[in-house]
Length: 352
Ligand code: NAD
Ligand code: TYD
Image (cartoon, rainbow, N blue to C red; front, side, top):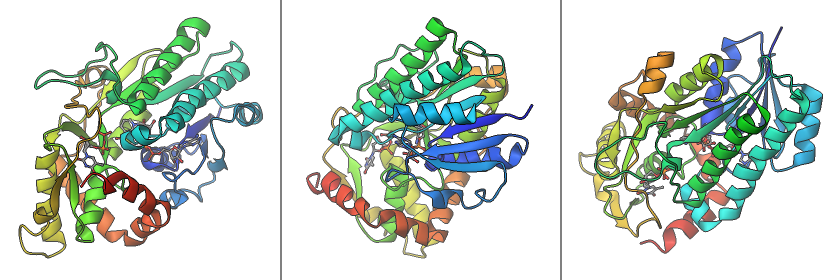
């Protein structure tokens, strides 16, 4: 029997990569991409696959329970890969309620609709929540997040994602809903909205604008190429064990300031500017409130049980990423027109 899969948030950064991978790979499946097209969602991200016969786009908001119930009744999905979210920590500090509605209420709306349509017939069904390593809180100089690390979210974003994780697990324990989860580290690559560190810095360097570095710049993140995350999501959806959680990471820790220096070297070379010119744009600004010091993932479970590991060396991935943003000038211009400017001014005006 053919499968019908709902992908939420497919017009965003990671969701579009999941669709790029899975739609051509599984021609016997039907994919429905449900996305509200917030500032972060962009159908331009899906140009390469939108013509395929097993792909369909539906515009809709996961916070609208009636709409979600009707969609599930009409489409009778076999599976859900849930990525739709408000995803930016700085925006969650400015405006927490959007995160509560989309990340928590929206997730429960999807769980309820799946529970109702599947009504206890769970054979062949799966509800997959794509989550983040930020639910685990922050690390000191050593140690890694494992699947057993207790939750300790510290921003409105991570607290809302942690709530969604708990609710998904609660639907397994209470209703036997066949759920699965993954918690991934920071992604980088094409189609990432330029509010996140790397595309923001690439865009600013290109336009000779300052690169804002929060606090002392010694905050550490574990960076993973987004296409490797998409591969992991496909694998977990198909081969992961029900009710389990898989941590996904790049074994690739960088302090922000070192990462930005590496980026500056690559940008000087690609833009044919004198060595050191991009680094002159680095500007230390006021720190993020409640800034988590270090994230790092122990991804040994997914390697051991499902055979996944990152495919790409970071230096190569970063170069590919820079090339993509420089080659896709129109995409960058389109997403940074309009509301981007007012967000940028609000976010960075008081920091410098
Ligand atoms: P993104 O912000 O780029 O995309 C989110 C998408 O969700 C957008 O297309 C947006 O239009 C859509 N959306 C937002 N609110 C919606 C609503 N109410 N109804 C329907 N659609 C809505 O995010 P991303 O970086 O692609 O992240 C995708 C998922 O992966 C999120 O759940 C995020 O928490 C998780 N994650 C992200 C990272 C990362 O580094 N970006 C790392 C780990 C986990
Ligand atoms: P970000 O890309 O927002 O991801 P997250 O907060 O989910 O890890 O930020 C990555 C790191 O870069 C984080 O330590 C905050 C820092 N940062 C800056 O120093 N300057 C910036 O302008 C931004 C957006 C982030």
